[in-house]
Structures are given as structure tokens and as C-alpha cells.
Figure 1 (cartoon, rainbow, N blue to C red):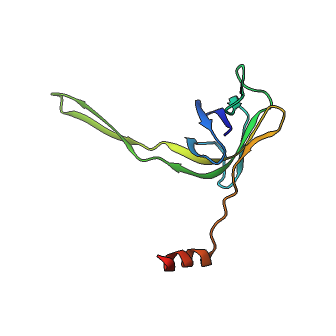
Figure 2 (tube, rainbow, N blue to C red):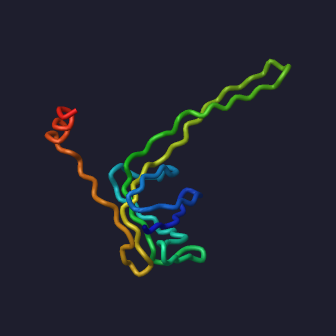
Figure 3 (spheres, rainbow, N blue to C red):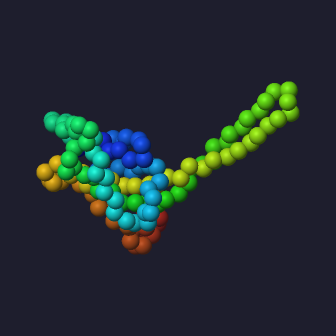
Length: 132
């Protein structure tokens, strides 16, 4: 099973093809669009590994953007004792949800590719419901 270490939004992620990730929000991105990550720090599989200094030139990872959204609210509560002073604040961090499709090596060869997702037809869904 091949994997790659990508860097985006100031963070590093170890990804495999077919995996779904929540990453920092990508600017100017629309759902169902393709994204390419060029900052690949390392890639490999069980036998070989290629490590960049600091990145591997020519390697890339292709992904599909599923959606842009916000996380749950994080409450920030500050209280100063014996001063009758409190402050309550909330924050919702934006994120992008992506699905990794392909991992390319530095020569341009495909190391791994995700299986295509096919939506079940209406007949299959009704058959499953009636069989239960």
C-alpha cells in the first residue's frame, strides 16, 4: 500500500489513495473540483521510500474536493476571579474535506490509484430495504 506525506495549511498529513481527510480550508476552491498537492515531503510503500530535501521534485498527489464547511463551535471562556468579569466567545474553524485519488512518483508514474465510487441505483437501494 503506497502512501505520501503532503504539506498543506502549515500541517503535514500522511495520506493513502482512497482516504478522506479534513484539512485547513483551501482558498478559492469549489466543491467537486480537482486539487493537486505539489509539496510532497516523502512517498513510498512497504519496500522503498523516497524522502525529499525538503520536497520531492516532480511528485504530486491528486485529490477531489468534497465540501467546504465549518467545524463544531469551540467555546472560549475567560473569568477573572473576584472581579465579576467574564467573557464568553466562540470559534468555528473552516475546513475542506478531500478524497485522495492518485499518488504520483517523481517520474510521473502512478504509485496508487483510488477505486472509483459508484452511487447505487434506486433499484439496488429498494432491493436492500425489502430484503431486510
